[in-house]
Length: 46
Image 1: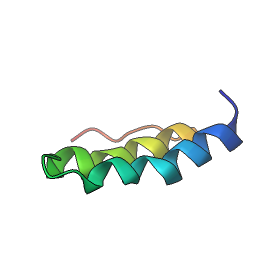
Image 2 (image 1 turned 135 degrees about the horizontal axis):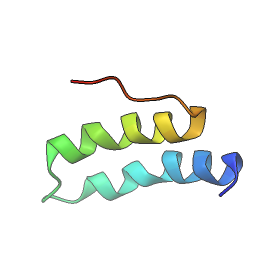
Image 3 (image 1 turned 120 degrees about the vertical axis):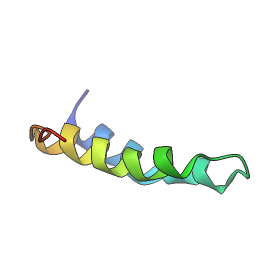
């Protein structure tokens, strides 16, 4: 998938979070995961 599409999905994706049953952990993990994918960065060990 190209970067433009990844960026578009990353920006539109939070619209799913308006549902009442969204897990806050998932809500916070999505932007982090999207940033890692778009930039090609590696995740640090937790």
